[in-house]
Every structure is written in structure tokens, then in C-alpha cells.
Image (cartoon, rainbow, N blue to C red):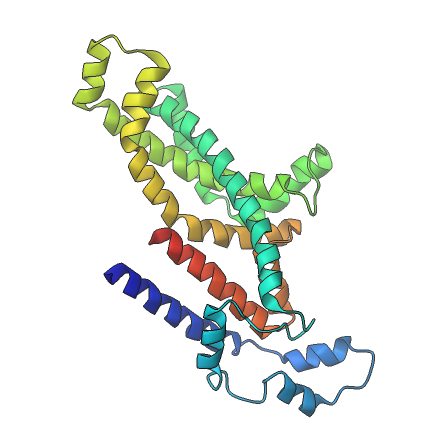
Length: 280
């Protein structure tokens, strides 16, 4: 019950705080609409129609009730309903995140287990170097470098609108962290009495590594994976923007540029709810 209450309070805080911060962005969405419109616009009437003539907190509680029912209002720019827009972009982001988790866990599990079972060996040293490099390479730099390497010099992936490059960029950082984590946890399991007893009974090879090395720590790894959802969503914002993948991250970035307040607020709220839900 305490966790549910804390989750609800955090979501409430995020809802109001995001609205306050968004309204502090420089620029006026009305000016953007007028600049993009080919016809004359009654600025005052449009401001009243869009609810921009009032302070952000004036209709906050009403908007919160609507948001909890799945109604996030309409975009200032396109006048389209935000909820269907978010639903469509959510599945694009979910597709990206699922692929990153699958490939990232595959790479990091193989590397981490190889390093854990041979301390000081070449795989252990490679895991250390790889994890350090992956953690130190910022995504805004790594993305363009991967684009040059695998879309220009070696044209394997599409530079824009494809899944290959955004997945690869996120997998590198994800697998670096997880390879080090799996190596540490499996190394602890290898030193346990259960592992040594299995060796004494003649258990060898992949059965020994999976059943007595990886399985005992899998519960911790699954729990920790939930806490990484927020980091993955944060990385998705950068990766989707760099490679023009039409997910929630790109929608958020475009809405910020256009000062589309309702879309920014709705995207931030949904992303925060997903992140907190993963850690709950």
C-alpha cells in the first residue's frame, strides 16, 4: 500500500511539475502557428480557444482528471487528439526498447558469463575494457559515429527511419553495463557451495553455467531490469531523434521545438508513469 501511495504521489508531482516547467519554455506557440499559417489569424481569439490566456495551474485539476481517463486533450499545432497519437508512437518506442533489451541481454549474458568463469582471462579483460568504453561514450557522439560507419562507409543500415542504427547505439551502452553486472553476480554464484557441490557431482559445461551460475542470480537481474526502464526511455529520446525513428522520443522533441505544450506535457507524463511503473 505504501508503494502504491508513493507511486501516486510521484505521478501527481510529475504531472504538475512538468506543466510548470513546460510553460517556462522560451517562445510562444501562437507565434509558431501564425508563422506557419498562410492566412491571417486572430491571435487573441486563438489564444483563448487554446486556453493559453490563463495560468497553467488554472485548469490543472480538470486536466489531471481527463488524463487519468486517457484524454490528454488536443495538439495546439495539428488540433489532433493526443491520446491516439501517443498510442501510435508508444508502440514504435516499445518495439525499439524490446529489441534493445533482447539483443543487449544476449550480448551481455554471453560476455559476462565468459568473463565470470575465467577470472583474469582474455574475456574478463575484454569485458572490463568494453564496459568502460560503453559507459564513457555519450550517445549524441556515438550515434553519428555509427551512422558514418554503418550507413555511409559500410552501408548496412538506413541512416534515417530504420531500426538498425538506433538499436545498435542503445545496445552498446546497455550491454556494457549489463556485462559488468552479470560478470560480478555470476562470479559470486561460482564461489558458492551449491556450485562447487554440482562440480563435485560431475555437472559440467553449459548446464553447470546456466543452472548453477546464472539461474541463482536471475531474480536479481530481472528486478534490476525494471529499474532500467527510465534510462532506456531517456536513451530512446536521443536515439529516435538522431535517427528519425517515429517513437515517443521524437514526438517529444518535435513538440518542444514547436512549443506544443499539451503534447510535451502528455508525453512527459506517460514516460514518467512507465518509468515509475517499471520500478514499482
